[in-house]
Image (cartoon, rainbow, N blue to C red; front, side, top):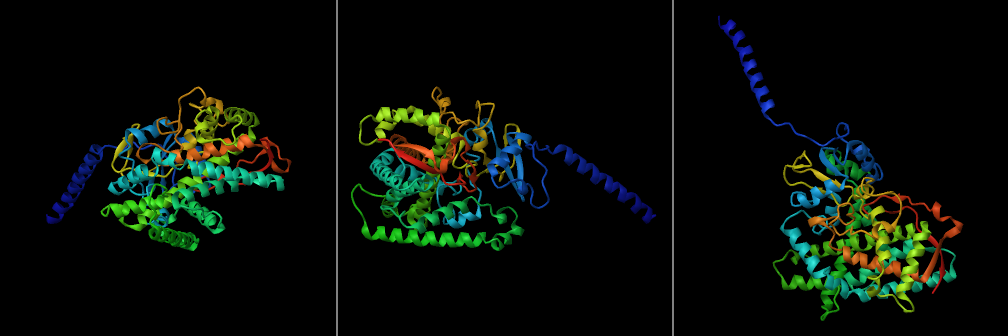
Length: 494
């Protein structure tokens, strides 16, 4: 009898548990996830990232839509490829998506992500951003350093004049790196360090490493690959070199204790540190991290903007001629162009907008991370999802831009569309809380350099190369540069 009862009870309990499971399954709301390509075990969609992520992600978005969910290992990645989706992330739900994921390479290079670009969203980040915006990058401060920009650009013109008279070929890519580096060094550190080739090499390695993906961030069990590949060794070496350099800079400034108004960024930060003992700047590592941000944003991205803009102008001689005519008309017989003249150069500003549209310095920006479960355009997005905003793809959206791959500055002459974070069709510097605070400073350099160059010189490609055949290939990294240096033949004009 007991055996018979047990035989009856077991199916009964199984049936009850099955009913409970069905009830729970039916009562649990099913997630409406964004479209997603098929993923592989362990690695997810990492194999689809490609050498140029902005291009690979653009290709995938054409098949799966402007809101697409990938998985890099175990980490969910939301890819944004439309202005509407970007507006939702960077404006409507900006507070939810203003966090940064913890990435091991920036964390080791920038003192535990104590900078503004990579630090997590919170009180520390608010204080650091406030210090940068108010103390270092306010409009007043940007204007204060205009004499540095004007002096260094004049020095650049004289160097090119001398090189053009003694050589058939001038490397403009190197020239753009030198001018931006010299300006940032004077403004941030008080003097130029660009004459030391090692410094430029360290900075180049630093930016390349920031653009690398660490396997261990997404697949912890495969983190050993970063050691075997040599990636971790490079990160440690570059971090040590920059720390030693910046330690020396801070020690030198601490001994000098400059007074008055002629202060560089390190002076300003050290003064703030002394006057605000309880601030986050009490730690010298925070000062070093902010200075590294200035170099990353000021030198690398600005030189990239100059390089791509000049390449597009050479490739499109009609646009170059229009720009030269405008600059020379505004400058007239003046010995030097000043920043006051730039405001009258509307075509120059259109040229830079068009260059930024086609060649965003950071084509996928720095990734964000959601802090809570939410919905984006009807799709369920889980807390902890990383967000990649493909501004390169957004700026090539044919539903908004006519002939999106064509360099056509005239498209900006009769429109109010700008890149300052209000028009989400054009957001090369990001938008919202995480928008780039150094945008105005970098643009001031770019505009002045280009205006002086096109006024003083006519350009042609070296070795008889035709403009239409100019190679526009890219090299991978956090900031996208030209794969090949921009070599030109220069003719002095005035």
